[in-house]
Length: 114
Image 1 (cartoon, rainbow, N blue to C red):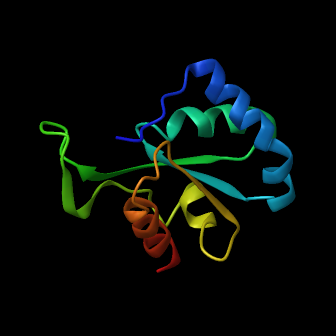
Image 2 (cartoon, rainbow, N blue to C red):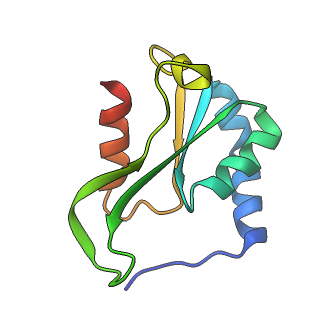
């Protein structure tokens, strides 16, 4: 099925190798798509010291593991207060652990851009 699995140590090493590139991008905030995006976002935050906004989007059915037809917004950040109000017009890094179809990432980018 083409899937590649990583250990926690491999994820940590992979994120650590990206720190210089992320610093060059200089995001104001990290949006972590949960659940899997939380871990690499938190590892990265230790190095770049930027706030994390947690969201949850659903494309796959947890019960069946099958891909749905559309992305469902389960949890989103408050765009009117706190760090959430700092997203509009700012540099945002969106992190997820899987990007097999680009569907969830595309949805997230489009929602952030609205």
